[in-house]
Length: 187
Image (cartoon, rainbow, N blue to C red; front, side, top):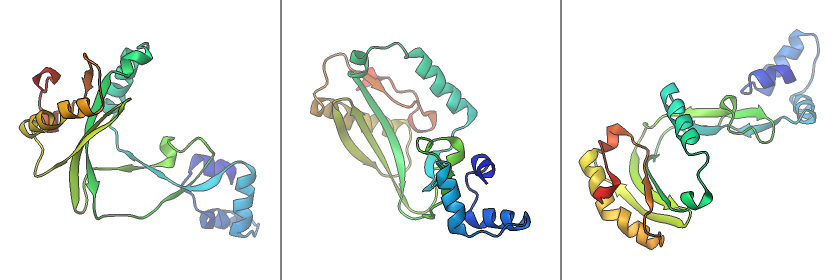
């Protein structure tokens, strides 16, 4: 049971019970849960994570390696921004996985998500080590012009709100579909 659950975390107690019956052993689902608990495996809701293509993973790893030796003071002067689509309707089912503590974000223990579905709203926001900036609700389709307008209306007021020091760095996700080329000196 433990080997199967470690290999396939989405295995249900019912499936494990059927496997045991096929092997000639009759056990309850409670007994299966107790046995897995003794091995540090607990049924948990699978975390949802964005679906990342190989190029996304490689780009994130490259960024991390390039900035690995930056001191804490550097990161205290960075303003991060991103936009997100918040689903108002859609699939709200919960998936359970068997996992050990501390493994919530292991790919086998997560449910990939995509950015479309039922009704939704799109929002832009920013934050730094000093706090959060403005939240802007985006109306209509996002493009480079709209993104620049959002920055013009929200980025500087947000940095003032967060009391950022001179020379702060603006860090965006560089999504070409939404932004086009944006230079932080433009705002």
